[in-house]
Length: 222
Image 1 (cartoon, rainbow, N blue to C red):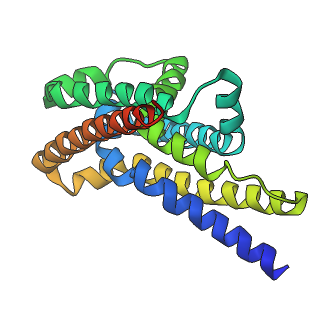
Image 2 (cartoon, rainbow, N blue to C red):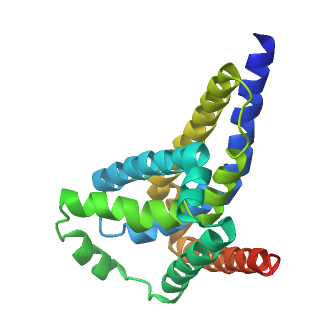
């Protein structure tokens, strides 16, 4: 029993330690706020909850069956990194180069009604994927879930550890995104603009790094 509990804690901690720095909820909060500038507080909180739900499901599925899905389609992790890194780089560049909306423009945008279907669609793309759950976190999730357990008991303990670890990660994501307005208010308008641009630049760099990791992985197979 003690060995199972230890395995559970180690698995949960591994999932948290491997995924949380890549997702970086505090850094993503500035970009999340910028991409939801046209929403009111209630809608922004609702979208944050959906992002956490979608992200949890995506990474849990990647952990449990991601390796088998890639094998089925004949894909490798470097290919996923190159394709996903290009998407992340594109998103980072668009955020970095888009003009800042002034107060009057933000008020006019916020007055525009957004339907429930639009909120659901935006919550998945681009807010969940690739902004929150990108190719980096997916490839890490596939990697940590690629080691099969020897017994059914060990498999159950490992799965529970992954579930709890990822659940904690996305509870943090939900808090950071739903409180993005409050967090950024502490920085002020200038600080928010700096944080958003800096986060966008870091996102662009992450995308380029992911592409390079994928290219390097592909070159090593030649």
